[in-house]
Amino acid sequence: DIQMTQSPSSLSASVGDRVTITCRASQSISNYLNWYQQKPGKAPTLLIYAASSLQSGVPSRFSGSGSGTDFTLTISSLQPEDFATYYCQHGFSTPYTFGQGTKLEVK
Amino acid sequence: QLQLQESGPGLVKPSETLSLTCTVSGGSISSSSYYWGCIRQSPGKGLEWIASIFYNGSPQYNPSLKSRVTMSVDTSKNQFSLELKSVTAADTAVYYCARHRWQVIRTRGYFDYWGQGTLVTVSS
Image (tube, rainbow over all chains, first blue to last red):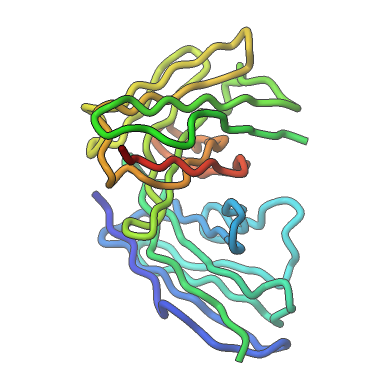
């Protein structure tokens, strides 16, 4: 199985900050990397697919980049509703696996 | 707007079978662009993809669960279902249904719509 490792596991930031979360795959996955946001008690929602494509309806302050094994999710200017947990997921082959999550908290 | 709704018993006894049904509304399950998947989330193991199924019944299974999992689809009801046999406490989790969009080839993809999830507890 392809292992997905996110860093950091948690992050404290303030409204207006620029935030970057990284995800590393244990082998090359081309650009088959997806990002999700999850708020407490809710299902994950898709933010970014294919490493850098913004899902419809997702604010443009979210962006993704990378290919191969190293990927990043960037939030350009944090808004109050962005405090949540973020997960990466590879879609390169089955079994699809997720990172362990990055919890974004208010500083 | 596409919606997925999970249904099933919230409590299952050890060694028994967990059965989950996912009902799709606002769109057809019989689309060649999508699989339909099940994902679970537990505190110990995080998010774990279990399986996905195509409208023609063709499945994809996580090898770690394959021996215990069966997925099926009922296009007449716009539903798909998961059965997980011989459950233990380790199968306690929130179970989600999701639309699985495949990319380029059918073993690649992402999950673009999710149900709200249902908590299944395995306990006697």
